[in-house]
Amino acid sequence: MKNSIKKSIRSILGAAESEAIVHEAQKQIIRQLDAPSRRLFLQRGLTLGGVAMLTGCDISDNASVEKALGKISGFNDRVQGWLFGSTRLAPVYAESMITRPFPFNAFYAEDDAPDVDGTTYRLKIAGLALDKREWSLPTLYKMAQVSQVTRHICVEGWSAIGKWGGVPFGDFLRLIGANLSAEYVSFKCADGYHTSIDMATALHPQTLLALTYDGQILPQKYGFPMKLRIPTKLGYKNPKHIETIEITNEYPGGYWEDQGYNWFGGS
Ligand SMILES: Nc1nc2c(c(=O)[nH]1)N[C@H]1C(S)=C(S)[C@@H](COP(=O)(O)O)O[C@H]1N2
Ligand SMILES: [Mo]
Image (cartoon, rainbow, N blue to C red; front, side):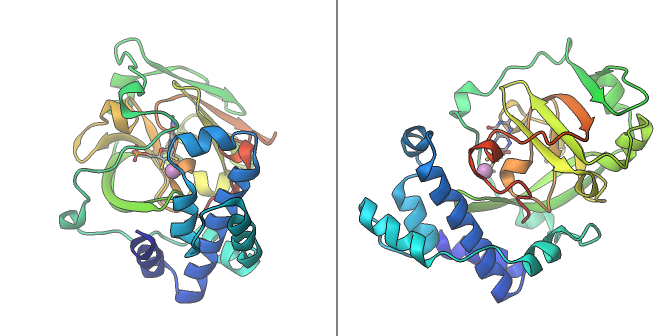
């Protein structure tokens, strides 16, 4: 696992950058261990073994966690600049490389994924947009769509290639008259999850308002009825089951970000 995530990151970045990304993942995870949610985090499987996997350290007690902490270096600005350059494209893959089955992940078990009723679903727009009409699913499905095969990278130490289809998010933001000079776009989800991104990422050509997975209507576990697919960002910046999109200048944070994950979360 450790090698496969390093390898996948290395295929996207150079060796030095990939080391920095792995270090950042370590930092984020170890921050989690210090947070009040530490118990919950350990319970749901992000164990010390997960930290060991990412750090390459043999972590069996708190003392060795401290030692691993000492080895961790900062996330350098050059890497951040490389990652978050708004024109840099994430790699795309052949359909034959799609990971099957594609992994499920959330802050709960797969059986607890929210059961959103597609017939009554309305996507709500809030904040700095001219047109705040609600969107039913049929109206969203009628829009021009594209699809792309990209790699999803989760800080918990796995990555997988999948195919998502939907509306380029920049097109959608222009359509609703969103203020494109606003700082943030934030997402509130049916399961209580939330996250937010910078406007440059929202307008990135590969950022999709995703309605399908692998050519099918987005399955419940992968975010029905709608998610944001952002191949330039880590998994936790890809919100599933979105109910409200808000354009705002006030820092919105996010579910994991508020607990210490890096807000940029680029991959
Ligand atoms: N609504 C919602 N979105 C979410 C999450 C979540 O718990 N709830 N988890 C995030 C994390 S950490 C990951 S890795 C991906 C997993 O997406 P997948 O189930 O399609 O693999 O969803 C992200 N988006
Ligand atoms: Mo994740």
